[in-house]
Image (cartoon, rainbow, N blue to C red):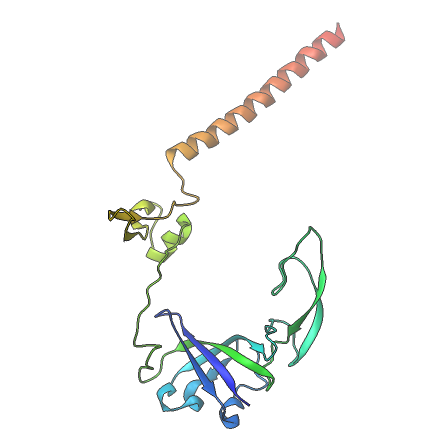
Length: 217
């Protein structure tokens, strides 16, 4: 049986698809579950020393493997909001849909693999090329974690920007708007909201005391 292996390398951003029709090579993946690791040596000498993690796959009819469904065939599950391979159309809606179990079997058409550990030599098109991320993180906390910044560092200086030529032939720089960025204006608005709440509480307290005084008299 023919099977495709989509191998992704997160460190370079590259991906390679190889087609395998040798049952002996594929047998290593059978009965393994999603997120389990497999030695890459079985795929050939170029993958010697590599460790690959099973990230998912599709069967021959295109149904995706779902983590946590511990079978090696297709099942019909009642899926709700947040489930893989199902998009809720109305609030509270659930639907019975076919999904493929998370155990690898011979009925799969594609297995998705991730390089966990690099081997002795480079694999052409996978480890010898570099595809940098076109878009960097947008959220302030994620920019901090990417560049190992402290609270004192200015996040705005580390935003990943890119240059492009506009339709008029002008060189321009494009960068994302940082989300969840705490600025003096944000803190001022926070204090303002707190002050409004406190003032309302004090007014209600004073009005209640005034009413109680009137009620007594």
